[in-house]
Amino acid sequence: MAGIKGDVGLLRTTVDAYRDNLRRLKSWQARIELTRLTRKSVLPRESRATIDFSYDRSRDSTTWHWSPDESAPNPGPPGSPLDPITGVRSKELGGSAHIGLIPRRSESEPRVAQVFPEGQLKPGLGAEEFDPLLFFTNQQEIGAMLDHYIEVADGARVNHTSVRRERDVVILDVDTPKRLTRFEFDLTKSGNLTFFLSDAKDTQGRLGEWRCEYAHIAGVWVPDKVTRHRLNRGTREEMDITYRWLENKVNVPVAAEAFSLERLGARPGDIVADNRAGVEFTYGDVGPEARNHQALWFIAANTAIIVVLALLSWWSRRRRVRA
Image 1 (cartoon, one colour):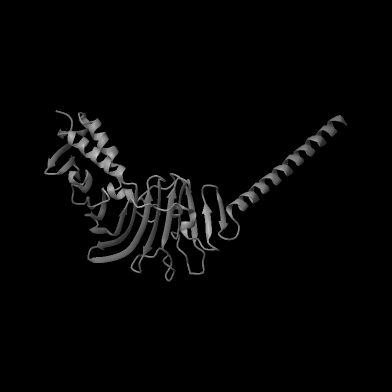
Image 2: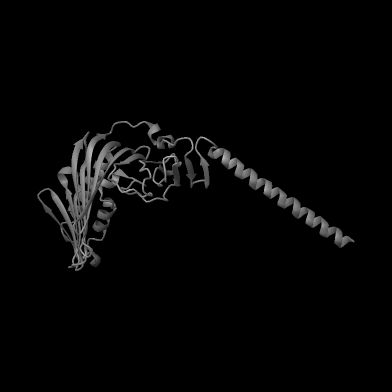
């Protein structure tokens, strides 16, 4: 018989509880300690960072501050400063912005703030485009994914898929000849994803594991600790990433100023590259409005010159024809 094996109704129960929990999340503010441990053969390397973020659902806005410590890899040249990264994404801004991501050669070199239109950068859990809601999902569209499996539950394309319940945990397996993918959702934690596995079934394949622990705060289940493990069996490279919440505030009002461009903390002399309007200016010197006016004046002046020259050429040709 084609289709998903097991009680598909468990998926509907899960997705309804999952969405109900997210609807109760109005705002979220937290401080996270990030630890990253990488190993290739027997050479481990550890780095740490602190992430502060604020999220407001009514404004559809997020701001974050990413502070790497001295153990973090420096993308710049030797001796260059390792800057913290501050970002903001909001509807009012019409996109997202961050400062500190582009390496500097020295402390005297200005930082670069970049502003991007909405949708240009893909949300993730990195410093460039941080989205804390992805902690709920292991960076997957959980609601849409479960809706899809419910919709195609009787189709032949999901023959390798099964769903079952073990106590309060709903387990969704996609077990193909080449890969096992497993999702575990805890109904006691409002159907949230607590474990994810992706395991390639060959000696050179990749293994990925994701685990999330939750805390119940202000009537909402929110992540309190997330661990990720990745293994490349072919190269023997391993990576363990741990996000541990040091502070966790739910549904505490966030000031509107938290999501403004001023939140980036640009200093006079810093460069601002606004990709929304295609302008670049020095912060504290010539503002974007002035630069736009300069550009418009230059275009208008050149257009006028071209029109005058065209009229003179037309008038000259007409005189020659009459002569």
